[in-house]
Amino acid sequence: MRSLTTFQMVFTTLPAAFAILHFIFFIFFKRAKENLYFALFLLFYGASIFFDYQHILFEEGTQTMIYLGIHRAMIPFYSIFALRFVYSLFYKKLPGQFRIISILLLISGIVDVVDIQQQHNILFHIVMLIFALEISRVVATAVYKKREGAWLIAVGFFIFFFFSIFDTLMDAGIPTLFQQMENPYAIGTFAFVITMSIYLARNHAGIHQQLIKQERQSREQEIEQRLLEADNVRKTQELAEARKLQLSMLPLCLKEYGGLDTCFFMEPAAEVGGDYYDYLYDKDGSLVLAVGDATGHGMKAGIMVASIKSLFLTIGFNPDIPAFFQQCTATIKQMNMGNLFMALTLVRIKENKLTVSSAGMPPVLIARKESRQVEDMVIKGPPLGGFTGFSYQQKETTLKPGDTILIMSDGLPELFDDDDEMFGYSRVKEVFNEASTQSPDDIIDHLVSTAKKWRKNREQLDDMTLVALKVKP
Image (cartoon, rainbow, N blue to C red; front, side, top):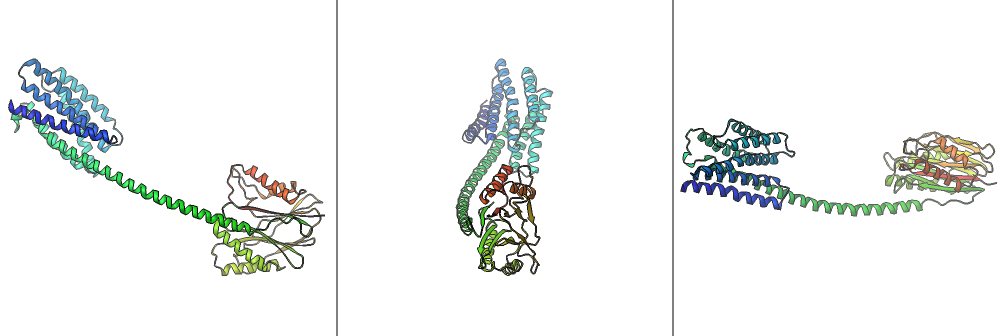
């Protein structure tokens, strides 16, 4: 009696103490639900051991049957939480077989309690075998896949099942080495509880280290983000200054020159645009106009624009426009600017004569007052910086009072709407013709407002430059 009471106290208080410990772990870290399932398993398991020894210690029949019934009623519950504990270690989602096995355990437990006078029935043994095989499968799979600490779980369950087999042999009337203990399965409690606790402690420590690592990474990312934000602010300021400088290099509209009303317009698609317009006066009384479009956008395109402006202001007086283009190409080649090119239209106006040449630019449009028709002067040629020695062409035409000239980059005709439809050169000619009787300012306003209404919410992908000139009476 004294020995059995000692065994009862030891095998009951050990799982109860560890159950309280792991329940406290769960309270302070609710994400680790495996601590909760392990604590519930230990509580029911400790209760099962307590009442199993209790029914042996009491010789009176009624009390013995009550304690034995409570012991048997605990078995399905600690088995269910043991299975739930193992699933929580190696599965993110609870498998469907858990419900089936849980129902079978509850049914076998009810049958076992009802048939209290007999040894464990065949259903109980079958269900417990299924339970043991399922846990063995899950643990063996985890060990095979080399899951962290899975071998500890395997050792704990192996010892637990090993001593449970001795207890089953005793129930079948076969003597074992642990006959004097009455319940040798309780010996497995020590090894099982200790190995499971070691695993959970390692797991908890790993989670803690991971949280520390994540916190350190978060701080590093925050510092890196601040540095990036500071760098972005610096770059934004630099781009804003570059945009301001570029716009300051562009001339304002000419209200009157040699009988011409003019207006210039440019809307960059990026902070620093690749479009360019400019003019200068020749000593022979000519007005020379340049409209260009550099490759791409941003700082590289801005460098190309600045280079062309320098060349235009230096040698743009040359009345031979094709020769000017060839000089520009040779200079760009010498600067080793890689794949950067410059499309350019150059227009020279003297009295009523207009001379134009183009290097990869859209046609120059002329709205005739008399015919109310729009002529397009198409001149084909590669952008500057492409082919050395290319023979560019130039065309001439006569201007009359009321005629209107439109020089543009490809930003307006190649504008897209929400349906990926391009504005197109035909629509540009049509809209230009509608407003050709108005002033250059109104013509450009009409073209820009029409284009914005047409593209709706679509982002502007290219720089848009327009120069309008009207011959005054």
